[in-house]
Image 1 (tube, rainbow, N blue to C red):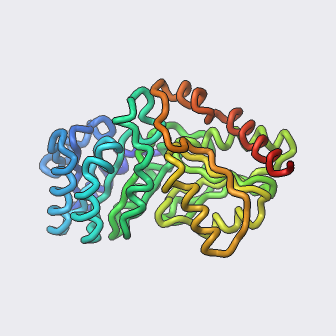
Image 2: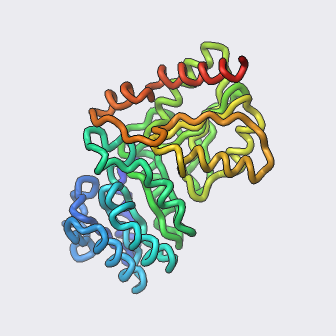
Length: 305
């Protein structure tokens, strides 16, 4: 079995006495670490601004804080602290956002982090990592801790739905299929649904290039450019607002490289999603593999018309 996020974080703390684990009363992913780490585990309570301010202070003293809080409050309630205390100073604070995007499930709009990527990538020098499952999350953690830069990680503990063939590297995507009909670009929890959509599209005679971008800052521009040059249409799939997320990033990259290609966004547009259990959220919002395939085929038909 692959190591869990918690076990990898615990092992890194053993190797690195400068590593601290902090939380704003968000212990679910790290419930066994307080006893193991003793004074190197700090819970500040439900006050995310204090969490980031304290982490920045500790980083200034040579520590590497790995902080945990609900993604919505970590990136929005504490945004000015992240920007000013961590981002401007370029401190190696590693921020782990719990239940981001659709993983918020039954929580309402106040707890839905679906603008978090736009906010965090908007701060110069902050890495943004969006693992597709628990295996990729655990694989990304050592690279995040080793980097001297601030980092935001979308926490995702779900079991893997694809077989990863490429070791995790910051700024490097993983290409899971290489068809030249449609390029599906995605990240995080929706990789599995995009993979299912790709299989359905292939059965319909549409070759699919499936790309798991893994890190959105730095973005693998080479992978985005290659996908746009080889496919007839690029589709971005994300559990995020359309503005500021992957769709915006891909448009920026293609414009910068002078590439003209149809880019079709599948996102939440500019609205919050209906709270429910994850399978029901995916179905209601139109993000299951079958629904994604139908939406892509409709976009292709509109292109051909």
